[in-house]
Amino acid sequence: MMQELSNKNRNPEIQVAIAGIGYLSPHGEDLKEIARAELTFIYEHMKSYSQNEQIFILDFMTGEIIDKTLELENEL
Image 1 (cartoon, rainbow, N blue to C red):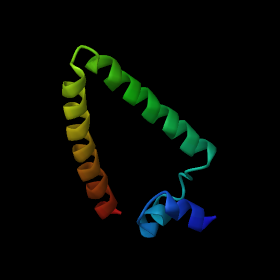
Image 2 (cartoon, rainbow, N blue to C red):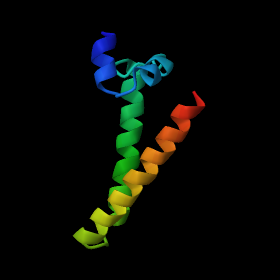
Image 3 (cartoon, one colour):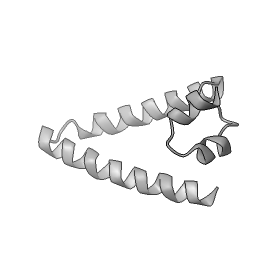
């Protein structure tokens, strides 16, 4: 099971640190639904931009999210 979970995240130490959430647990499922709702909110607000602008915005946000994720992981 841990091998399957660590495949979802390149750093198994991080996976262990967040194991209490449980990627496959009911709480993990709830958190994924929250993430989907937040993304839907973002996508709805981006509809007025061109496709290229949306790609630029999403690309920028991806980098920011990765940076924030790494920051939070380093705090564990």
